[in-house]
Length: 304
Ligand code: DON
Image 1 (cartoon, helix red, strand yellow):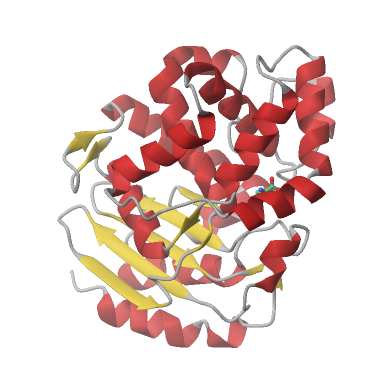
Image 2 (image 1 turned 60 degrees about the vertical axis):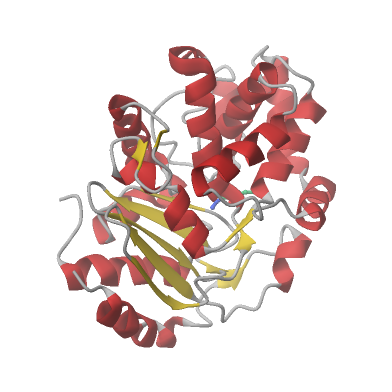
């Protein structure tokens, strides 16, 4: 299918939505990104690529990186991962502290911040250098060694990351972290600072649209069953407390980040990554969500 006319139409139709959201400013380095940036990239399992707008420009992936850390942790730890993190939607904001107290330090899922700290802790325990191992893994699945962390964004988040520090200390107090709090936080801030474009993200995640086997690099990244599980977690937890509305509107497993990126998976067909920095109230890209909704409406394609 030629998706190009559909992407061109979407780029026109989202224009009235600029100015309705707000660029993340709680990490000061993110506040500098121009709000009018917009891009989409589609990568099909057959090797076709379609783009519109700023699809090749790299931006801060933030929580989209949790998709890659989860994949890496599943590879490193396997089933043991689920002893310290759950698989249920949280119904709470991504950085909420309340649930963690009454659920004894077992985060609801690996995508809320507390769950991502558990995932990062496992990576730190099973590698010599957590941050480098995550980056090496991204380089492997993209076949692109130019993808890098942004030290300025990582430092900016470290300086203002009081909530993450609270969550990690809370986890430690329940005995749920094996590594030092600061070690885990430093790796977390680094992987959140990963800079990738829509094109990079669509290419990197293609194994999830293809039963765990990456058709572009010829590598098996996850087993078919593990890939099914990651997609299921994306569908139920990938957009935090907006996940129900997103599934209702878009109907695809997806992961968002406060940098304004969202990557969505159409199993057996394609991946689609969108970038628009203005966020809605729950912290997901407002125009990115709209663009994905328009995509599934116009193509009639979703997982349902
Ligand atoms: O921990 C944080 O607050 C950020 N590094 C990541 C948050 C994020 O992207 C949530 N997603 N929408």
